[in-house]
Amino acid sequence: QMYIQPEALVTVFLVASSIGTALEPWILGRLGLRRTVVFGAFSNMLGNLVKSGGLPPFFVIPSLTRGIYGTCALYLGFFLVGFAQPLFQCTPALLSASWFPEEERTLATSIALNANQLGVGLAFVVGALYVQSPSQIA
Image 1 (tube, rainbow, N blue to C red):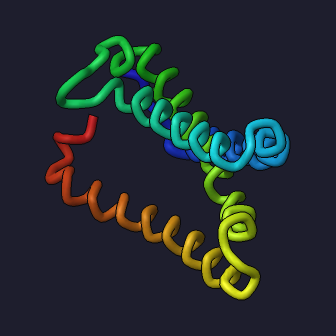
Image 2 (image 1 turned 120 degrees about the vertical axis):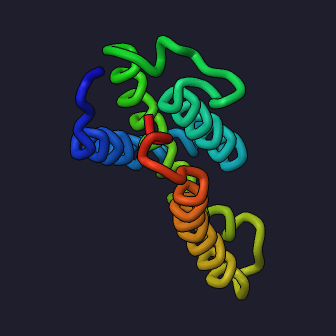
């Protein structure tokens, strides 16, 4: 089993997020708001499937969880998730400008941004509830 450096995973995530942030206006201009968010959701889902090796415990791709392929899949998954992040975090202002009257835009934008952070926090709580012992961490 290969040693995976957590710092390298964070670096891959942040580099991908920077690339996604730089490309987000172009993607938004080409795809529009709805397709950009759907593309971001698909990239996020695909990245999570790749880095977890499938959909454990229901569907697992063994080659994505072991050896050099598993390590590469983990880094690729973190890259995809990092790339998808700006497609969600950079769009709430446009969403509120498109869907809400001017007097409601500040509230709509703040709710969207805070809901995103709430989701991140819930991911930590749910993950901690799901994994009960160190042996459950692959």
